[in-house]
Image (cartoon, helix red, strand yellow):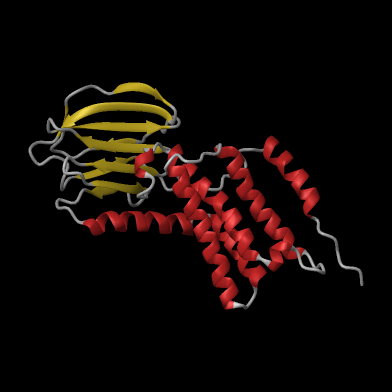
Length: 275
């Protein structure tokens, strides 16, 4: 019986054409949907500056500030590379923002996420994703290093569990590797290393790739892996012989995608390495 020939080449031609004509049909990273950035930065004067940035108008979306805070200036609307931005200054008394509750009003079940960032005068900073049913955050009154770590661990877990592109790719790797636990551990770890390395490089500004081509490559990685799973060729393809190599290569692309998602919601580059 003659082994089937690889079908990869036609897909390599077809997929870029689909990505060109239907670029907005298959978003990959859920963080791209977090189109609202809500940021509060305490200043030395005892006041705080509020930033509210959206990619487009979200009707009914409103920031809810602590009751003890009063507005000192009117909101000023400015253009932004991340969308429509407004900023104004508030004062929250001698206590500042520590211990206060910050929220978003008007969120619905299927609405976009809100990335809340709070930076205090004592050097502490907090990041939290607000969503329907969990649209408020109480700023800790006292410093705790574990809270910062917990916040980013939680964000990372949410990214993986809701990152269907990651889950599909890793599932494909599991199917490709089979029942060999050492090979499986090597392959999945390689994917994680590739993801982390490029995320760090992009965060530090050492390398940069346009978002759209990266997202297309992420989708292509899943497609090519699916094609490999349908092949029965002799000798085995490179993907079958060395799945760890494919995992680390495409893991690097997935890392660029995550970095792009964090940048698209307006997270300052200096915050990305810690994230």
